[in-house]
Length: 308
Image 1 (cartoon, rainbow, N blue to C red):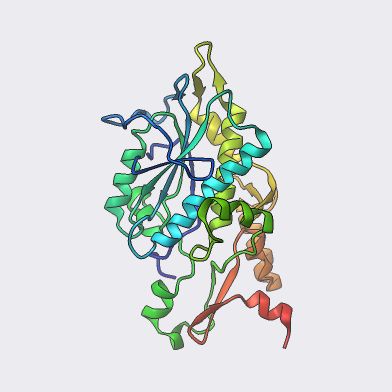
Image 2 (cartoon, rainbow, N blue to C red):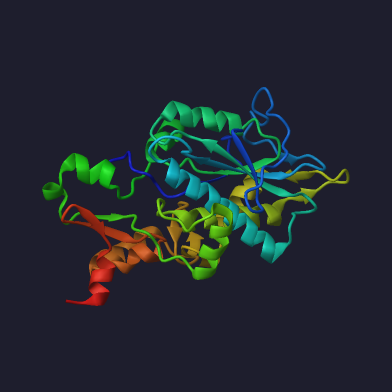
């Protein structure tokens, strides 16, 4: 599997990643009024408390490609985060301790690691930033953090390798079946249903997990500001238990890998799947399998369900 394919949304809670370019209110995608970026990182010490000043918004950062060949998918993922924030606000109130919630998206260039680093540096200069969802692509992620995962892609795997050599290979990364009510909420933000990205549900769920964690650990101060301990925020994200996520049930094992329920480990889930040849494991981990067939990516589960 080539490491340059787009990867599922990655959630960074309180880590030093941060930016400008596009500031979007989590309310139909309107432009938000945000202060100018600081001249340098507002949290050079990653252990320092996250501060949301009095009267200023809580900022959810998003690192996605907004230019180049992956811009359509990146724009959809950005709007999935906005949709996730909107839906969280509908269920939990419009603010956290009186602070508005906004989304700031940065163009991370996808495969251009230097642009991803620049996006991260700009996000770090954003006042009120509590976390970043992204980067969007494995190459950019590796350039910033030194690691990366891959997902299915015709352009990044099938075409370079050739259809005959790729025939039968199974990936994760076919589109999820999204709930109709979510698609309706998403369409009101984006203007149309998602088509380019296969990770829209995961991005919306990442926003839900991050906001729930922020709401759980933020400490309101006498002056109206919020103080968030980054360790507490990471722990709250790690303890997430979201049984009704858009992309399925979400919890994390002790290594931070996604699992269907608390107490499970991704090794146990995948080993059982291997022993039983159970492709449904992809779905339980928030992914849908893709198999190369005649040069195209198809969902083998659909073939199994439809029968001969």
